[in-house]
Image 1 (cartoon, rainbow, N blue to C red):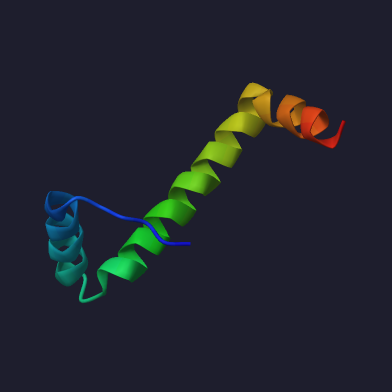
Image 2 (cartoon, rainbow, N blue to C red):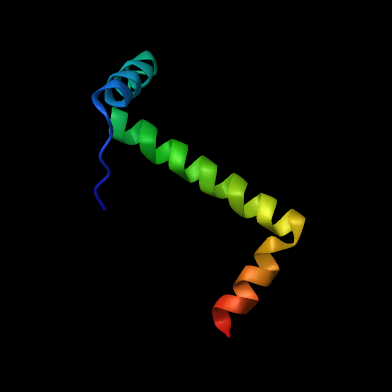
Length: 58
């Protein structure tokens, strides 16, 4: 998968990643993983996850 960011977002990603001595790619990977983990947790807690999984399997 390829993701494109605006130059402004790329600059911000590079700056934040450099503060942790990492790459922008690693930082984005971590952000997406954390976002997805939180989103899945929220869906389970709100009951949306069970409904969506049931509908997807139908």
